[in-house]
Structure formats: structure tokens, C-alpha cells
Image (cartoon, rainbow, N blue to C red; front, side, top):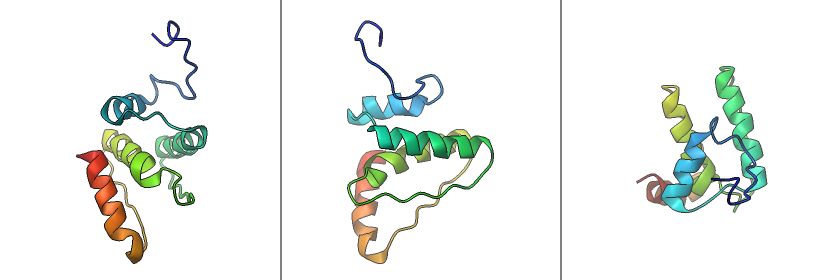
Length: 101
């Protein structure tokens, strides 16, 4: 299908199927920097490494990356931990709930 649509993927769809799920669920495709961070973290999961990352506000952490990582971690039988500040907790909880529900 992507050949017909002339769409160039920034990731391997067969290796990261949760991105396709998020596209269907939310209508969003990842930005290049989100793909870079996401694939880097996924490589760490495969190597059983812990990897931390930080993005500025508006980088798509709560609305895109954390839900993707939650789906990916579920495949490995893991539970991701998300750390946030007290000031951002209510906003991030609401955003995650809206994306994951």
C-alpha cells in the first residue's frame, strides 16, 4: 500500500506495528525526531537496557511517545514508568487517559 501511495516510512512498519495502531487510533504519524527517539528506546528494550530521554514541551511525549512505549512494553510483559513534575501531573494524566482509552 505504501508503494501505491508513494509514502516513505521513517521506520520499519513490520518492526514497529504499534505506530500503525496509533495512526488508526489517533490519525497521527510520528515526526522524525519522535521516530528517532522511539526506535532508540525500542532497541534498548530488546537489549534489556534502561534508556531515559527528555524532550521540550510540545515534543509529543504525553500524546504520542508514552502511549507508543506503553504498547511496546506490553508486548515484552513490562510496565513503563513515567516521571513528571507535580505541576504537570494533572495535565499529563488527562492527556494520557485521552490517548490510551
